[in-house]
Amino acid sequence: MYVERISNQEQPKLAKSGDRWSTDDERLLLEMLNAGATQVQLAHAFPTRHWWRIRYHITIRRGKGVVIPEVGNIQRNETFGDYLARMGITKSTTARRPEVSSK
Image 1: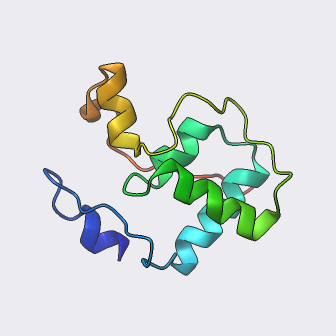
Image 2: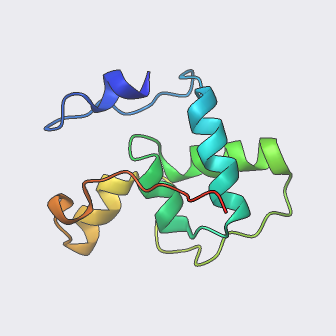
């Protein structure tokens, strides 16, 4: 589960292919897609999941034609933490999980 994976902030456990998406994760993903979230914003919301797993889940929920703004920043096999490390960005400046406002 997500909480279990991120509870160890030093070494959070990565999500595996069999890890289910919680109802809250599903809701957040769909809200972010509706709001036009970028690839980096989506990866930040699900920091223990590899980008290709997030994209696969989007395809399952919305189909192949969904356009994600600014795709290409995060590589296929990267998590948000991998992306930050590659870019030389410290995690302390991005600690909070993004929230989507309900308009």
